[in-house]
Image (tube, rainbow, N blue to C red; front, side, top):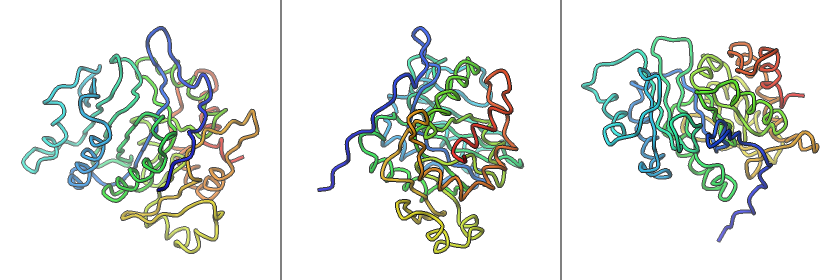
Length: 310
């Protein structure tokens, strides 16, 4: 029987908690970007919802928000059926579609688990499927998280994607939560920062918003890189290439890592993937809106996109 390795030690102070409110949470994040409308890929998207519920039971989801809501409200049985109702063949199609269902103690908190979609038809922005699970799952059973991401990659038609340690930020205090996330991610570059819907603009039709433990590229991008055999030659043997239905999953090591530039842990395998995809990451950096981090936000956001490129 194959056993998992011991969990990765979590650095202290990664999350931001003010009073009793978790403004910045550390999760195992999965963010998939596509140029296709969710209405045209309804079966695949509904499959991702079923896969998510198999790992996060619906009773754990406490608050939700849609594109018409200014604040989160409690999850109800009707809310749990919204996605299926919206994507039913007889339901009128909307240009703008957004839904977040999250697990948190209060509506203003950053989630510790979530299922979120963002879809705008007839747009030059990407549509996004964004999932979060407790970070401990990735520490304790990385093989299970890899298998879960592979399942998602087989049913969801991604253009690109990232999976690994990720910061979720509260939308109710963006500057405090995103400033903390930026500080921690610059020191621990293995942690991504997800921002829905702003990542939709960064990814656009051809950008890649960075790399993580698992980085996904579609078949078209693989061809631009010269195909699977060329990609294999361009990357160290420690990096796994996993074929899936809609493209290739690039695995930078056996488990997700935090990194710590202060201790000289610069994540060399992550950097190799960043080097390979740097032209598309530059596109995302140029298209991205700045993080809400106060002074010099544009320059510091650019530095964040390039934190693994030095």
